[in-house]
Length: 478
Figure 1 (cartoon, rainbow, N blue to C red):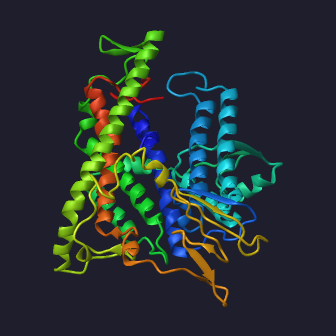
Figure 2: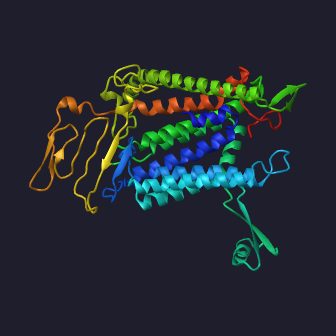
Figure 3: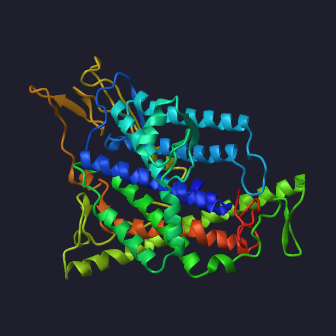
């Protein structure tokens, strides 16, 4: 909601779409494998397991956190390496120094290690989960990246020289240059296809998104992985279709009075952008406009989410019921079809999901779980505490989640008192209308954040870029 839109609000649209493709691919592919394999998380860790949120309700293989952390770190490292090793524009020297490059590399390495090792240390994943997640994240980054790689010179004294010669016999030279980690350039290919394509672009993208949703595996147990996959896939759909629309209809060239943000150190003189020395007042002005853009953009996104979700919850259920009379609609396990309910909870009250959670509701929206022991750990007890109350569950006898006493029977099982009908109805339901609702809402968020809001900032004179680089008639952020 905040980090990804900022790339587009400040002129880094290409980097933002690249990061979005990497993240969405990692979330979808890892959730696809989770729901396909249905491998549980470690049950008997030798440590105390702490969980916040609902991640512990998902399956364990592979680790989505490991996948995304590795792909994100490699994504930013490729940009950092490019800035440190090759000049851009007309600058004769690299953009960042060796010291800054080293510092950023260390920070990214610590980030990856803390996430991957943390998933194992907190017993949320096994070593295999994190290892496969790391490999998956690396492959996703490699497929998307257009990075040139790290050049390594292979001479005839290096054994790899002869391997290189066997693989590429046409390249006869006393030395070969091997580019380690060179990307396949999938992200750049998608960018070019979207910008130059015709009406087939949105038709193909929409079809692929709906197909990916339809073919997502249905797990044995109710798992939130599917909803995460829908959200990220829909954001990619909106970002790419929005980019196509702006290029296809020629709006990129026509919209905008001020391409560079006020206070950036660039002024328009006789139709040419000229760089001037920045003063303290310029810095203050830049930060004021930056804050104004972020606040305005996030508010617009929240308003869209609230209104669009509420409208679709009113429109889609009766539409689905009408279509169900004509033909059978696809339905997922754990999702109630529209023929079995009358309405979806309102966004404006009751138990509906609000665009911004109330401060009063925050303690109850955070779930903290503690699990000790289990089979093979040498510890006999385990409990779970959640949702801001004294909900305790003891393995081998204790209290249930409602505060009632659990009794252990002669077979070693735990007998829990049955819930009343009213308590059963309090369980969270998934409605089939929510699937298409998420697609439309999150695709709309991407269109707003990636294209509409930056164009609005230009029209208002707030600018988008912080630096100016001449590329045809456009500017881009450095």
